[in-house]
Length: 489
Ligand SMILES: [Zn+2]
Image 1 (tube, rainbow, N blue to C red):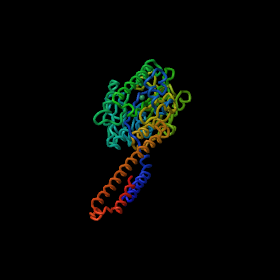
Image 2: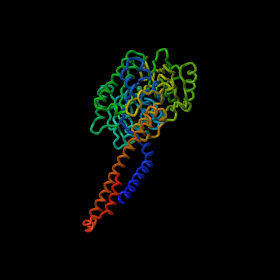
Image 3: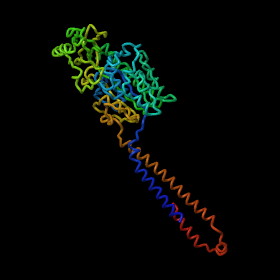
Image 4: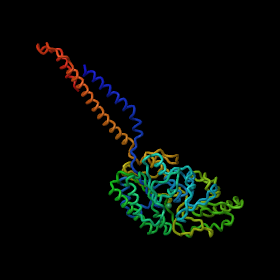
């Protein structure tokens, strides 16, 4: 009897396991995301097409083994450094995150923002940044109890946001050796309490393109140097067995355009400079009219725009596609120079450089940065044409298995870069089935063991029948036991 009883029991046990697996599997599979550590690297001002300029064997390797946006990314307006580095880590347009330019005036704080590259002793006022936004390191550290982040000079990371700072932060200093920056990042990824998110910033080739122009030989050399640094980074990752285990994104904040002394817009000749205050000069002119002269200043600029290469807007006229006008830090009048043109004024503190700049309309492809990535979550040798830089935040959240804060990005295109969801689901399914077989085997062994033990106890507990011993007539009982023998699994 024992065998058939346990057969029923084991059958029930298996049925329950299969039912539970069926009931739980879809939820488990959809939730399953393997969160590998993530490193995001920014080479400031690395235009989308710079790779064609010189030999870049290390970038080529990444493209071959990973993913690439071959026409670069559509970044956000204004195409400036602080605005775009903040958009990459928050997934928000300028009007939503509030870093509308490298220079800003906040009427509520009644304060002008001075960027560190203009004054390295400038004290950042975190109120410019802590506006309810959530950069990726804050999402990482607030949601994941083991989430630790390290920033090497990432713009904005010096601020306390939602009472949180990156676990490690190397402050902005142009002179810090590039290889030392990489070595520090590797140290953070391999320390006793390793980071799972790293942000690594290099201020070139931007710096040289401003001084020498984007088409200069010096910039070509720096493209080669950025490639060499990437090779050094990959070798250091390989040395520590991190390459192939860590997802690496390499991108930039904006592209570059050349400027020329024949393409200057002399602001002082258009309207009397005593009638306005300028917050930022060029190529986006942010202007606050003084003494009730708003209509007059606008009219003069509008007239000039018909014969000069720029467009002027009242704040509420700024095209919606720029996602710019809905922020108190955007000035009442904004003018945008055409690509390669520059505003110039005797009143400007900035020395005008006849070389190169950025900041223009983000519809200009010359303003677009490059993008490539490699790692366990990315496809191999896969390319897309382009996507938006605000999509990087939801992508990073997905890679780190975090719920993104509200943002302007989308997973529509970036999800194509990832290994197919069904591959992940298939791996999960295989893991699941293997676990099921192991559980069933253990269950079976247990059931057989229990059955045998029960039989043994039954046999040893049976009262001695003297007549059976003497007469040898034990057929009935033995017969039953013999029958049980066939029930073995
Ligand atoms: Zn920049």
